Image (cartoon, rainbow, N blue to C red; front, side, top):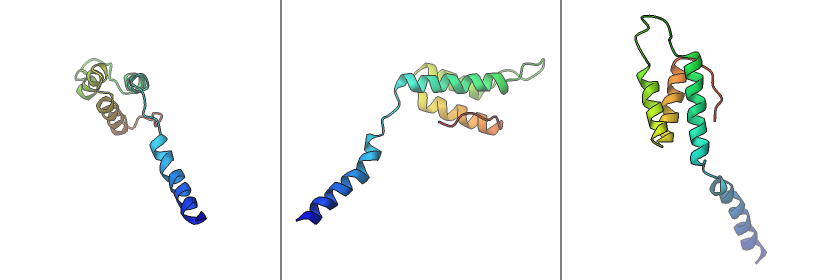
Length: 91
């Protein structure tokens, strides 16, 4: 009688941590977008004459973030920073 209850209790603790993980709020995701965008703007943006214009991936990611498509914007910014080998806080 004790074993099934113990097994159920253990199974509950194994399953719960993953399900209790809170999803990030829109405010947190928006802040992450802004953080990554600022890092790219500071270290990855070209500002010299004849640089070829703005980075279209960066612009698209900024638009995604502004329109609430935070996951897409964050992914694009992380990929861009990785390609440019610019370090950023992993989140």
